[in-house]
Image 1 (cartoon, rainbow over the protein chains, first blue to last red):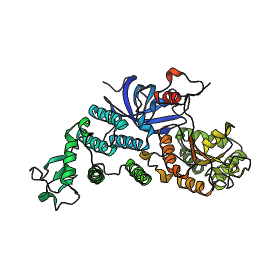
Image 2: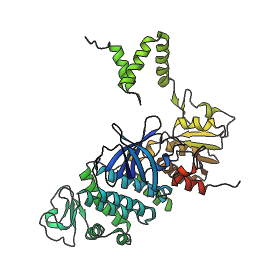
Image 3: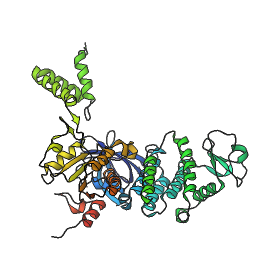
Image 4: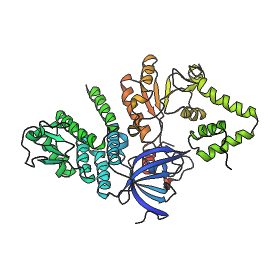
Amino acid sequence: MSSRERVYRVEAIVLRRVDFGEADRLLTVFTPDRGKLRLIAKGARKPSSRKSGHVELFTHDQFLVAAGRELDIIVQAETVEAFLPLREDLLRTSHAYYLAELADAFTAERDENRPLFHLLKDALGWLCTADDLALLARYYELHLLGIVGFQPQLFLCGNCKKELSAGTNYLAPGEGSVLCQRCGADQTGTVRISANALKVLQFLQIHDWGTCRLLRLNTPMHAEMERAMQHYLLYHLERKLKSVDLIHRLRRQLEMNQR
Amino acid sequence: MATIPPEPVTRLIEAFSQLPGIGPKTASRLTFYLLRRPAEQAEALADAIRDLKRKTVFCSICFNITDQSPCAICRDETRDRSIICVVEEPLDVLAIDRTGEYRGLYHVLHGAISPVEGIGPDELRIQELVARLKNQPVQEVLLATNPNLEGEATAMYLARLLQPLGVRITRLARGLPVGGDLEYADVITLSRALQGRREM
């Protein structure tokens, strides 16, 4: 498919959106067959715009796009799925930001990645009803890493290639792998991971969400898994993910209110 | 032989091109337009620009932009002091006041929560709002942030934060725009319009 057609139709999920010019918006969207695109939605900030509601963040839409000189322009827009519950609960909203930020961070423009589109679309859908948002975030991280080519090896030691033992092991982002107690103990830049946390991560990596969502984990286990995964992501992205702060802050606020 | 424009001209062109929506071509056009106009007009423009920063401050109460703190709205004794309308930008104050429907006070946040752009609750005037409500309790806080995801997130965050203060918290209604067409309405707007339907 040539990207030089004058008008084309795409399915897309809106990842980011910034104001542009007088009343326009510049969108970063993710599409199944054209990867990540930057598109202009003309006049989308006017209340009477027919487009504004269809170019909201984290909606799954159908766009008719006209090729522009530099940026392509959205001519028509229609929502396929609005993921309404994401908009009515702040903790879900902040997780949606996280899912979108990760997809944005790990992709380049116009790089087709159909599996990632489907993962993102499914994850936003699950996020509407999931009980354990942190578990969904970990599931999404592991599957996204697999799709974009940074899948961590969680079953064999990255160095001696032996099966990992039940004790403490080490997650080494530089190796893209877990190291066993013998190989990992003296390595720098690694993070310790307990046998139980590793088991859950392994489980998440190879099962689908329908199975994984039944897992029930306690808070310390969640904290350990999150620490390990953030360490791994930070190493490969070389920058902090901005939406993580908001998630932590909301969680703290929630805990305080419950007390 | 081409001559480059003198330094004062290039300096102004450069200054204009820093403005949003103005490229090098428009900047040159504006500069050469001013060159042809009488000196007073250029002086008046220069004064206006200088005064913009020198003579405006943030209102110490509502954080709107004003020439004198507290601002005219906060000083106005005839306004309803039992309600505060929370908005994202100073321009939103103008928009809401123009309706003539609202006669209460305002609070300007100067933005909305947008994690991806690096704007969290600490970057907004939220602590100031909480302090203001503790000092001078009101009956109602009207959350009038934009009806988009960032605005909604900010409203939800504020609602949760202000709940313990025991103040009535309301949100601007959302629905269909005047002059719009039902068939072009999006799912989000239409579902909110249905939820918020009224007796006739």
